[in-house]
Length: 167
Image 1 (cartoon, rainbow, N blue to C red):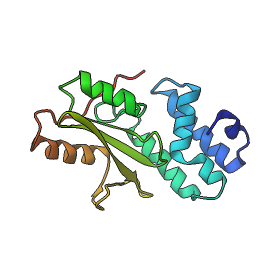
Image 2 (cartoon, helix red, strand yellow):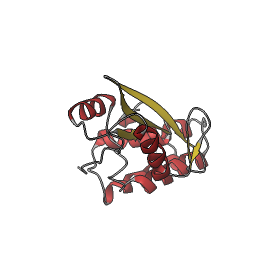
Image 3 (cartoon, rainbow, N blue to C red):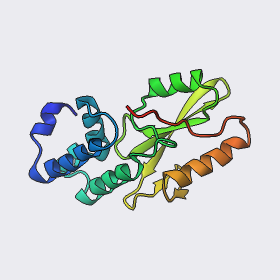
């Protein structure tokens, strides 16, 4: 989605976009790129085309509100490259949870697996819970982090989430 796409949205979606922009009032630095990222993650373009419901887009925005200031467990603006670089150079960090850079409504779990860095996706559901690919449901980001930390502790000395330095 590019900025010109945002200018041609219907009134329903532009209202949701205005609400999304308010996320930046208290936390995280606003940039046009970040705004586009959030818009894509919420599914603004899909909503405007009728491909997803307004309720689902609103729930995604509510999810973002619930994790927006959680700097200990969530790094929304990390990319594939930045998360790999961070984990490679910060051996005390066990994993990163971040917004998916390619799929709306998904979060990505990035971790070490031996010498490799691997990425797995989780889906934010319409009730704001989080589901993994096996159908396990986590009530919120904190519940997911606890599960991931416990699981990683079984085979890794670093099992805590990488905290985020807000900028």
